Image (cartoon, rainbow, N blue to C red; front, side, top):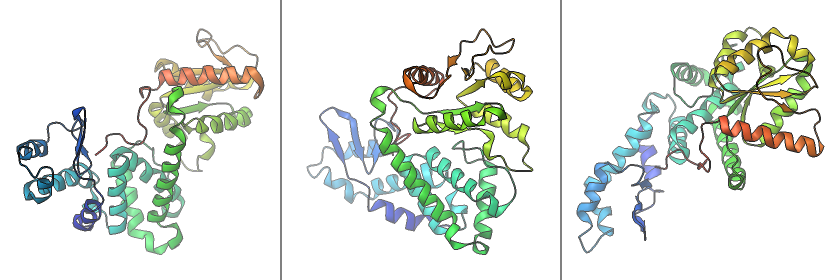
Length: 328
């Protein structure tokens, strides 16, 4: 089982000291913990008690009490919530802990879930995990099974290596998205409902939305033997919005109509007309975006309109900091 002490020693060496700007406690932080995010910690009462000393803030480094409070904060908020002690691989536990401190607990778990999905064929012929950022029993069980059997597989496909790669990709995406934030770009989870006849349009739209920072799900990667209906229900429920591609073919599809009804009743349906048709009865009153071509001025206008509506449906506030959920 993993040991917290080596992970903590490595992190503690990299944590910054005490800092405060001219605005006072609003931007006060110590050892990476920001007061405005965690105002009720005993740590701040201990720090306030030392501020009158002439050696402050240097005296903080000599206080065993404060060192213990900082250590306890990172253990309780990150290590324990990741159940890292129960992970049977020290390196994996440490990189997961370090990532959670850097980018937030939920984002670290999402990276773990994506990494486990890339290894699903090596472990079992089961369905992919739903990438939610929650350390549910399904995710925990998959993690334990993989680490318990990892030595029997190609070392180049180790969970540790793939997680490191996923983390690198995430850091690149964060850097890329920083200059998109000023124009109000937001992220969320989108489900694409389409007819098999329109698979080229679905794939093209999926690529465009991913470039805009959205997490896209459509059923092109479903494996044989997976309970398709159950998986679709889960993805529909998890989506911030459901984009329905209406065409002559999808109008006749019972699957598309069923998915559209669920999305409509959940008030997160966004219809796109990829052919000059009217949607089926029951969906005509919901205004759709016309996307009849994939280039030119009309296409650009349609995409702007679509992204605006998607942003309105997403629950992520404008200007959100994508780098961390709550900086430690």
